Length: 419
Image 1 (cartoon, rainbow, N blue to C red):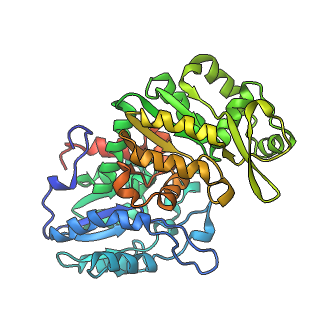
Image 2 (cartoon, one colour):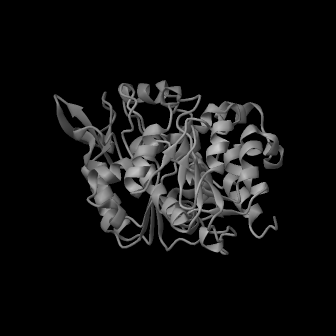
Image 3 (cartoon, rainbow, N blue to C red):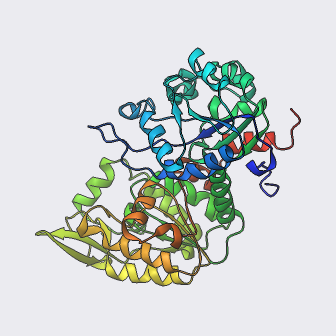
């Protein structure tokens, strides 16, 4: 795509050619059964796989599941292959070998339209996050890694459809572009286009709805979107909203403040003060909060604090205040629920706001695991009602924080290159 400086899959002829397709089908796993519990990323990968196979390509899927940081999810990809086959309606062969002799021979024997899923990339030390942290390499330094040495010579093209892993500086993500004509898959291009629209040319006013427990994500984005003027308003729910009211001098009581300090979140209060000093007019903060008393949802106004309770949702007045701003927005970016939405007592804020955003006239983008989960939990047919639902979490946050993502850099470097 010329506007992004990245080739799309429509720009090459794949008939009879071997295509290495890096997908992100890393899925939540039940800790007991080791079965996949959510197929969202698998579902999102289907259009690119189908288009390549239908064009006559020999499609070699590269994917990971789990990592050193979540070793309990580091499992073979056999179930992934079965789910892909079920959705594609065509055979997906699986081999529990990443790039060894058996995998290479299988790839060499493929016919047009065949699809093969190779073994879990994270079985290779050069693909795990701890290797990346300890041995930082540039893409050109990765050409001698096992994966690239074994697979690049038997491939004609490289396609990446794994934007959710775009922040990873791993051989499967950034090295093949040095050797093979490379293109972004359907999901990759859609995700990058949606986030580029939010960050570079949002319809005004641009409203960022931030919440959840991943406070570092919210504060990381805020620095960038406030400084460069991307965000016109920030609606702060969840713990983020509490931290900003603490920065204004409000005390919430022993239980809530113990919760904040116990998770090392108190350090964000000073940063919140700094944001309020420089951009006070851009923040819309909760004016009431919900807590549990005798098994019932209770609400308390800001001026009636402190109270010894945990505040796990925004209150009704805050919900209406936020909904008014959402209805007036030209662009809405959503990252982080308004409260502990998985508990019925505290689902009201997230449920009402997500449904308000689903019918809002502005361009809406939902990102982050909990935000996406809430969309599917509370909104009927969310794919049709939100303009874009991101699969990315860490990559999305880094992109909106102004960080150059290794994958995007590598794909742009490959644009127009002669091989």
